[in-house]
Image 1 (spheres, helix red, strand yellow):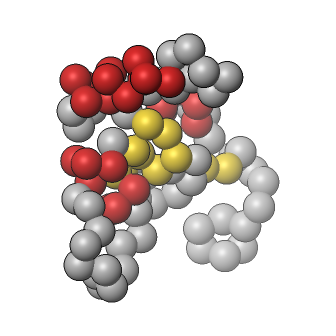
Image 2: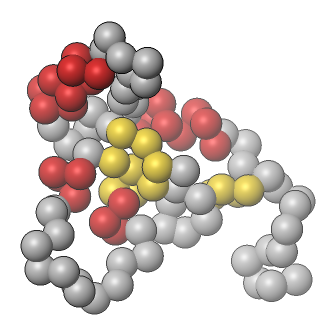
Length: 90
């Protein structure tokens, strides 16, 4: 899951949300804690809830890529406990 967050620059994200406020697809930014509620009780896969630029980072292939504090988005992967292979592959 990826989700827009207030955590990097609240004023900038509030401005974005206001622009989308009267559309058919309004934005609902959340804090890291608010996003964590969506995966509560699930097994969160490493590296957890982090800025999407930090999730499974590869060597930079595009030097023009914006830094995490300009993307304003967290990423997380989680699964229901007891479903799918475990971390050790069993």
